[in-house]
Length: 222
Image (cartoon, rainbow, N blue to C red; front, top):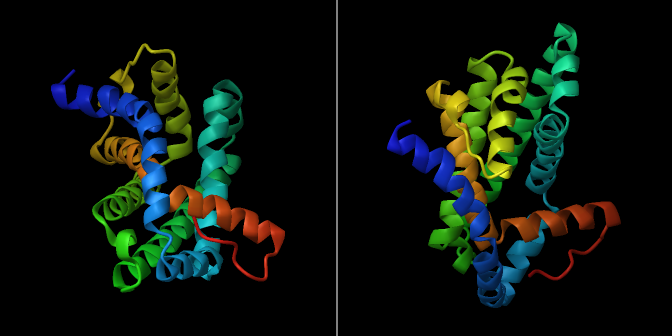
């Protein structure tokens, strides 16, 4: 196993999880820095526009498609062995990825262009946006270029992820795959490492609750 593989697929995943505590402490600083009226107005509008719903619809598709096989790999492989259902899952996953990609790209472009953004155009926010976009784009490429991604995700990536959870990391199966699957895994862990330091998680959570609450007026920004 090369040093690059060890860094990307063994060290990076544990770093992504291990920095959650300092990230929560950092969030207090971030919350204080976005309390200006301009930033609050931008965040409130961001949670209720069409791009937010695209992001959430895409996320509502992608999260179960990744989580269910992780929790029930045997049952998932049995279900996906039926070709028509595998085709449906692949199509649904591609649509979900496209929705999420469009939503987060529109949201990020607005932040970069809006002079009110302030700290929302800072280095961490831009790095987080770039990592999320890279993970989503690489995932979309995998879904298009590599057939039956749902099946090999369950057969190859789920055992790798479970090995990380058991503190016995084994990226052997992943190291034998092509560039784009490896890029998708690496950029996903990079995004996971950066997300807690950004405003995105709280924005997504609040937009979700405001959507289901049917809020006529946005709630206060973080």
